[in-house]
Length: 344
Image (cartoon, rainbow, N blue to C red; front, side, top):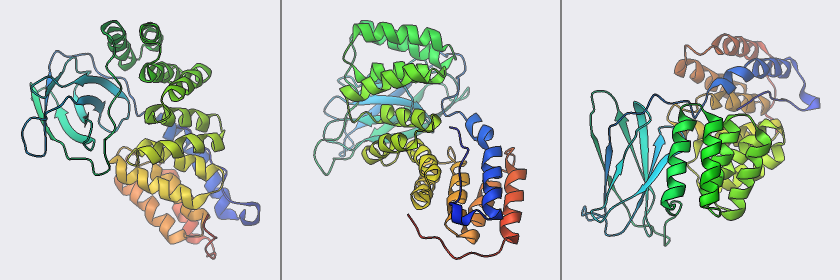
């Protein structure tokens, strides 16, 4: 995510605002270097067994979708369905590390469970207990693909995780031909082009995914990221707002939305979304503290801005941005106090 903010309004271009511009311009490459979907280690042969239970702690009496994510990411690594014993087996893990499984079933709240897969863990068993949805049917995952399309998707995901984006695009294109009306396949195509920085094709396929499924959160967030990169902030806000409305716990969506809002001068909305990203990200979105600090400074809340930036220093003491952050804090401390700006 790029971050080169235009801070302050013309009437408030004080020395503090000038330092803000310098600070966030210098941190742009640093922020963009934090990749949410980093390339994975080589594939292993270990399996993860997920057992799904109902509220009565008995195996869930209906089929559920089990989705695997790298912890802190919203990129699906694979989707499998439970068998008659309410068990799903995830194979071909893309490397050691922290993961999350999400389980979705009609009539139940989506459930998440974090687990660690490492050399010492061997076969991992994950138990997930589902809770009834209070407002009717809970959302479910994408419909199962036909075997041919699923084979191409699996190959494409392995290529994506290895950083072989052209190979991934080839496989996802083959999957799209085998399943021409599947929104998730179009999302994967868009994501593969986004990773190779072909934003034009990425935008085309993500828009197609959303046209098939207007509630596809992954596609909405990814399309918002692209608009943000292209500095089309209003379009980014439109897509991202819908994404986080559907999935209020999507920390990446809140993070990019905060970036878009700070660029258009809506600092209170930027602050709220940056704060949400940090809270929901569990350490994955700490750099959103920089946006929160920028928004607070522009709102005239100098002490709060310093507190937030001090938190970033404490949470990420080895981050390359730390010297710039310290210098910025020093300037904030020495600047004349201003009355609080009106919130957006």
